[in-house]
Image (cartoon, rainbow, N blue to C red; front, side, top):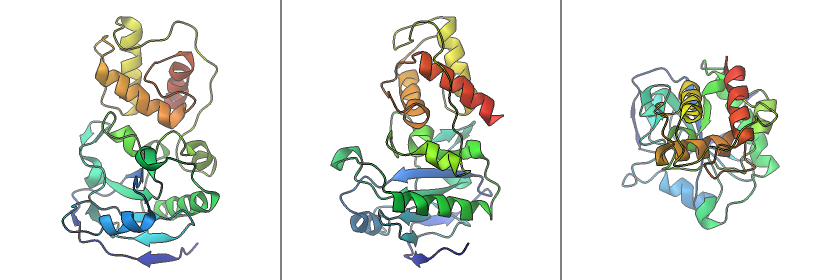
Length: 241
């Protein structure tokens, strides 16, 4: 499939040090798509992405995929720090939590699905490495957020989604400690988050749990690891292979 993409070059890029094997999805978090596009092309801003997807489905290319765009900032996944060098970044127009967060229109999602599929014809990107900005920068970022339809994307063949019945046992929350917390942290670390097992449910663990929930639970995103959250984690780990 040939996509209709408008070229809108950004000067904010540099040389890659690795073949891209990850996709990172963002929301723009600005009042309009026009404002976001302008920001991503300002030399002084020193931010960019490879693509921008408007709410009506229009696609813009800002940086060639062979170059490193500056979209993820301080980030981590599967032991890698600073994932810009290994990822392709897609900005999805949405006001975000600061300016009136709302659902992603169907035309926009159809374009996102088509774009992700097109990118994957050129690069080897595993489903387990199609992530949100919040996944690679928990506590610092929350996009694309709990309204982003990750399940729809996965059902179209891109990314992971897994259903599970809630696990038994009390919820785990900040301040808890013990083997249950250790196992939770170990599972999150195995998936890719920066959550070294300590057995202490600290603020950093809460942030990681919140990021996981925004992606794979979405009915709650408060950083409390209830039975559904823990069961979904185990299910996603199984799906990730």
